[in-house]
Amino acid sequence: VIWMTQSPSLLSASPGDRVTISCRMSQGISNYLAWYHQKSGKAPELLIYAASTLQRGAPSRFSGRGFGTEFTLTISRLQSEDTGTFYCQQYYSFPPTFGQGTKVEI
Amino acid sequence: EVQVVESGGGLVQPGGSLRLSCAASGFTFNNFWMSWVRQAPGKGLEWVANIKKDGSETYYVDSVKGRFTISRDNAKNSLYLQMNSLRAEDTAVYYCAREPAAVGMTFDYWGQGTLVTVSS
Image (cartoon, rainbow over all chains, first blue to last red; front, side):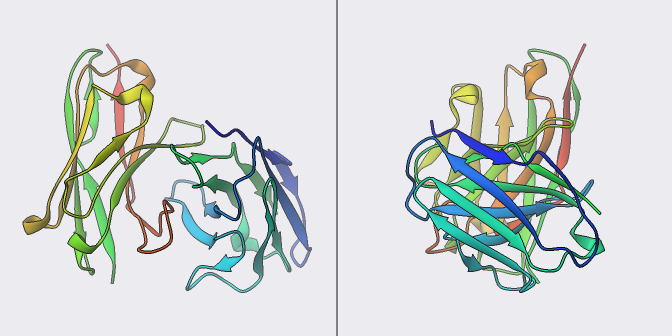
């Protein structure tokens, strides 16, 4: 099983801020990484897959980078609707696993 | 519009059984692998099981192997999760999720979830 460490666990920021969330893997996963956003009481939504490919319909203020063991999700200009929890997910090895989440407060 | 809608959750005693259903619409169901993902109250996401397009292959997380069975009926555009020998630690919101073609085990459409509570 691949272990994932997301940081920070909690992030407080203001509208318009540029914020970055990190996801570190216990072993290399090439670029088999996705990012999701979950608003309170709702299902997660896919934002990015293959580490840096923006999912159709996801806002362009979201971007992803990384390869191997270190990955980041950046929100270029934070908006009020970005509140919630962000999860990274690896799909390099079975079973697919999720990070513990980063809660974003605005 | 792609939609997946779960049903069948509820309160069940430890050791009991429950069958979840997921009705899919807005896409060609038999062209996609499908998964169940769960989320315990206040916790993170955990992939549970998935099934191949034609139902010929199924895979499970270790913690549910031998207790849960995923299946599908492509004629009815429906996905199922039969859960037996339920434990308190199975308490969670269960999401039905579509795996996008040619991407890998990511999940591009999710239902609203159905809550399963295992308690005496």
